[in-house]
Image 1: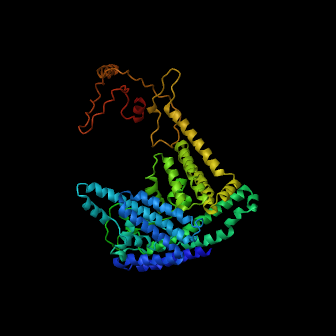
Image 2: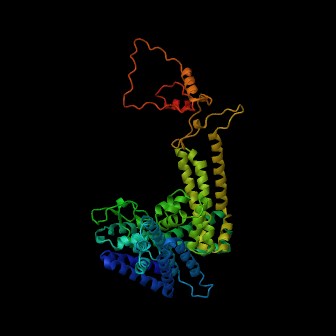
Image 3: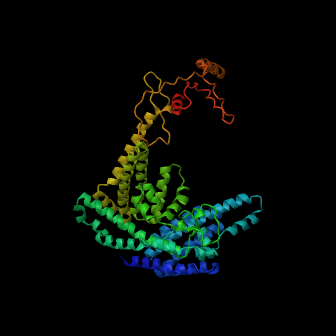
Length: 556
């Protein structure tokens, strides 16, 4: 474990007892105390480079204060351009920032963009409601919605998640600062429950990282091993990568729990990063059930055992995933889904850093998502229960190998090192994803051709409504072959009155009932009359009322 990693662990572990103290403070002291402790952490680990974070806050405050209508776009541009300047300090002959300063700057960028987006939305809503009032009156109302510079500094330097996350909105921070019954919220037991696996992750990280050093993959000796050895070693490197973040995010969540930060009643149905999604009672109570979903940043079990690349992204760095979905994906300038995903991955790679390995890995994700989507439509939806279960296990195995593959871009960082490593394993994920996409797409086309029912040489074909499967039937085993369904003959497009007469003439006369048969009981008054057939359809052939499948076959 490096010295920087020891400092991270010290900060995270020390934040837990501080949280127990914060839970006992009042609303007047809580925000100031949390900010002072956070500023102390930043200054102790970043030194002079603390100035970068303050400049970012000041620039954002000026934007939302004077250009509120467009503050989201301008803040996104400002913070991301400053990230570029921050990362080019070496080329500009400035002192190189510490890794801790980089972590602070990353989380601060998320907070500033989120705050600007929420203020812009509040501004637009306020203007639309107060459109009939004079401009000075509207301006005073809008200014009342904005946080002051002091509030922004307190929010930005709050010690909780300041270097490792989780990300949280300004509203979540306010709810914690102004909660008057914070000490009544049960948080100690949930914290211990969450913390129990933290030491296990730490021990596993130390053991596996010592057995499988990253630098070994850059040596010529590594390339001389068999392909199986290289693939297994890649999976162990990814295991080390996951365990490092499992430890960091588990302790970061526990620090929040010890301070009862992000605790909401279960009725609020809080979501990671977003916070409550339902109205809830705000009064604290020891009997009321709370959860900490708002600050949940990692789900190790689902990360390791979910079956798709898409789901794996949802359970990893969950609060940042919500930020990307809310402020980047949904506001993307393009409409096509695959382009939105590519844009989001590009922004995420830029946010992580300017190392080429990030871009090589993130831009591989859309290909993997396209491949698993095509295979799901083309193959999985046609399988039965047993076949779908087997498909999911194979999908899980390939998902883990895809993440092994993409992880190397994050740890090797450089363009040449990443491509050299992928060349050692023959770029197999790129080729495999492309092949699976083509297979799935071809199967979906073949399935579509069958569903459409090509016309025979005589020019007549079966109605497509008779061949399209319902959503519930997809994935079930095919039924055994039976006799061909009766041909449906469509009446020509004649006037409605002529069609009704032809329909009545085509109906066979009902046979006389035997004398001993009782007359049929009339339909109950509450039963609705049967809906008439559409004018363009032929009347259905007589069929027993108790046979729904028969009525489906005779419907044109």
